[in-house]
Image (cartoon, rainbow, N blue to C red; front, side, top):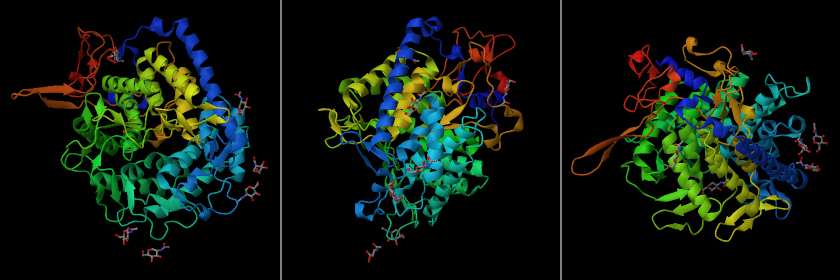
Amino acid sequence: MLPRQVVKWILVFLVISPSLFPVSVSEVDSSYWSAKKRHMKKKVHDMFYHAYENYLTHAFPHDELKPLSKSFTDSLSELGNLKLEHLPQHYNGSALTLIESLSSLVIMGNNTEFERAVLWLSENLSFDVDARINLFECNIRVLGGLVSAHILATDSANRLVQGSYKNQLLTLAEDLGRRFLPAFDTPTGLPYAWINLKYGVMENETNETSTSGCGSLILEMGALSRLTGDPIYESAALRALRRLWSMRSSLNLLGTTLDVTTGEWIEYSSGIGAGVDSFYEYLFKAHILFGKEDFWRMFHSAYLAVQKYFRHGPWYHEADMRNGKATYWQLTSLQAFWPGLQVLVGDIAAANSSHREFVHVWKKFGVLPERYLLDHLMLHPTEKYYPLRPELAESTFYLYQATKDPWYLEVGESIVNSLNSYTKVDGGFASIRDVTTMQLEDHQHSFFLAETCKYLYLLFDDSFLVDRNYVFTTEGHPLPVLSSWHDRLPEAYIPSNWTFLPSEKQARRASAMTLQVCPAMSLDCGHGCQQVKSACHIPDARSDHRCFGDEECGVDATTCRRRTCSMAGYCGLWLFI
Ligand SMILES: *[C@@H]1O[C@H](CO)[C@@H](O)[C@H](O)[C@H]1NC(C)=O
Ligand SMILES: *[C@@H]1O[C@H](CO)[C@@H](O)[C@H](O)[C@H]1NC(C)=O
Ligand SMILES: *[C@@H]1O[C@H](CO)[C@@H](O)[C@H](O)[C@H]1NC(C)=O
Ligand SMILES: *[C@@H]1O[C@H](CO)[C@@H](O)[C@H](O)[C@H]1NC(C)=O
Ligand SMILES: *[C@@H]1O[C@H](CO)[C@@H](O)[C@H](O)[C@H]1NC(C)=O
Ligand SMILES: *[C@@H]1O[C@H](CO)[C@@H](O)[C@H](O)[C@H]1NC(C)=O
Ligand SMILES: *[C@@H]1O[C@H](CO)[C@@H](O)[C@H](O)[C@H]1NC(C)=O
C-alpha cells in the first residue's frame, strides 16, 4: 500500500510545496517578471492566432497548412498513401489542425471560437473514408483531441451555450475508437501500425511497428472507455501494453521496433527518443490518471533502467536492450521531452541538468536540430531539420512550474523569439528544413498549435490550471485527474472533490511532484571503489532537518520515500515504518 502522503501527492499533482524548491518569492512576484509574463503571453497569443487564422483561411477543412504556398495538405491520410491517387476523390481531409487547436483555444480563453469549431466538427466530421492512417498519430492527435475537447465542452465551467452540445465529439471519438479495433486483432494483441479507416487492416499490411506505437494508446483509449462506459478500448490498449512490457529484456530494456504477428523484436537498440519516447511517458501518466499500481511498477523499473543504461551525465544515448551496451551517441530533438517527464516524477535536479544541455544546443543553432551526432560532434547529414517541435518548450514549462525560477521564462522568451524570427512567414509558421541555412519547408504541423504554442502560453500564463488538475497527453491535450477514474486505490485516499485545492496565496501550483523515484545507482569509480548516487534525492528545506510540517521535508535518497515531520519537529521516515 502506498503511504498516505505519497498518494496525496499523486492526487494534487499540480501542487508542490514552495519549500521543496526554495526560490525567492519576491523575485517571482516582482513587477518586472509579471510585466514580462504579460508581454510574452501576448506574443504567444499572437503566434497562435497567426498560425490558426492562416490555417482557417488557406487550408481548413483540410488537415494542415502549407504556409509558404498558402495551400493545404491532407497529411493524416497522405502519410499512409504513398500513391496519392488512392485517396478518395474530392477528399477534404479531417480538419486535423482544427481538432488539434480545440484545447488550446480553451486554454487561451476563446470559448466562442471553441464552440464554433466544436459545432462545425459535430456536423461535418466523418471517419468513414477509404484512407490508410497511422494508428499512433491518429490516436494522439485525433482521438486525444476529440476526447479532451469533449471533456472541456462538458466540464462544470459549462463553456458551451446550454443545449447546443449533445456529446457529438464523444460520438465521433467512439466511432473512431471502433475503427481502431481491427488493428488489435493480431495473435499477440499488439496493434498494426497502419489501418484503413473504412476497411480495417489492409492486405499485406506491414507487420512492423514501434514501441511507442504499441505503448502510447492507453491514455486516449482509457479515457474513451471511462467516458462511454465501454471497456473495449481500454482493454485493447492495456493488453497491447502488457504484451509489450512482457517483451522487455532481463535489464528491463525494450527495443525500438517489433513484429506484431510474432512479438519478436526487429530493432534491439533503443533510447528515449523517436519510436520509444511516449511509451515511458504513458506508463507514468496512466498511473496518475487511472491510479493502477501496475503502471507505477512498470514505470519504476523502466525508469531505473533508462537512468542506468542510457544516461551519460546530462545526455542520453541509445543502448542494446540485450546487453545494455551503448549503440548510438545521438542527441535528438524528441528527447527534449524527457526533462518534463522527470519533473512529473520529481527528479528535478536531473531534469534541470538535461534541460540546460538542450537549451545550450538550441542557442547554438537557433532552434533544435532533429539529430546531432554526439560522437562526431556534427549534425546528422540528412536530419538537419526543425519541424516546429514542442519538446523543449514543454520541458521548460514543467521546470518553471516546479521551480518558479525566472530563468526558465528567459528560455521561453528566447524560444519565442527564435520561432518568430526564423519560422514566421506571411502565411503562418513554416518548418525549418536545414538549421544551418534556416531554409524553410512548406509545412505547418498541427502540433505547433496543439503543443508548441500551448506550452509556451502556459509558461507565461497558467491560469487555466488554477484549481484544476490535468495530465497532458503526449500531444498536449489535457485530461482531468478524476477520482472516479482511479481504480484500486483505497477509498480513503481519494478526495471526493478533485477540483478543490487550497487556495491560500502560498499554495503554488507547479509540476506533478508525485511519487518520488530515487534510482540509487552504483557507479564504478575504479580500483574497486563503488559510489552510490541517487538521481532524485530531494533535500529537506533546512539543512538541520528541523520542520513544522511534512511539506518542509524532502525525499530520502536511499529508501526513495518522502520524509515526514515528526512530533518533535524533525524530518524523518519513522512514521511509515
Ligand atoms: C469537399 O468539399 C467540397 C466543397 O465544399 C464538396 O463539394 C465535396 O463534396 C466535398 N467532398 C467530400 C468527399 O465530402
Ligand atoms: C477567437 O478566435 C477567433 C478566430 O481566430 C478570433 O477572430 C477572435 O478574435 C478570438 N477571440 C478572442 C477573445 O481571442
Ligand atoms: C458544416 O459544413 C458546411 C460546409 O462547410 C457548413 O456550411 C456548415 O455550417 C457546417 N456546420 C456547422 C455546424 O458549422
Ligand atoms: C500481397 O502479396 C502477394 C504476394 O507478394 C501478392 O501476390 C498480392 O498481390 C498482394 N496483395 C495486395 C493487395 O497487394
Ligand atoms: C506478417 O506476418 C504474417 C504471419 O507471420 C506473415 O504471413 C506475413 O507474410 C507478414 N507480412 C508481411 C508484409 O511481412
Ligand atoms: C539548475 O542548474 C543550474 C546550473 O547548474 C543551477 O544554478 C540551478 O540552481 C538549478 N536549478 C534547479 C531548480 O535545480
Ligand atoms: C469543491 O469544494 C470546494 C470547497 O468546499 C467548493 O467551493 C467547490 O464548489 C467544490 N467543487 C465541486 C465541483 O464540488
